[in-house]
Image 1 (cartoon, rainbow, N blue to C red):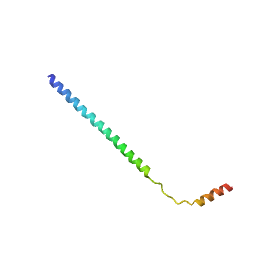
Image 2: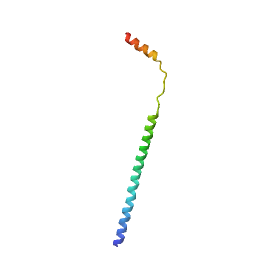
Image 3: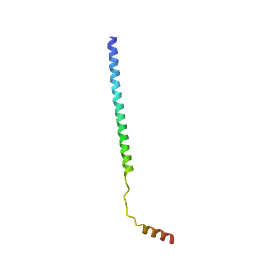
Length: 70
């Protein structure tokens, strides 16, 4: 009878061991995915180039000169 009780306790502990391991792996998987997406987003941000606009520098200088004259 004692042997049967020991095997039952071992089976329950073994079952609980796998439950905990699965939840840890899910949490670790989520963390790994978030780290990977953060790296990808950082690379995308660092490699983006601003849109090049044609700016008329002379008209801007004229605006400043007009403001200074007032």
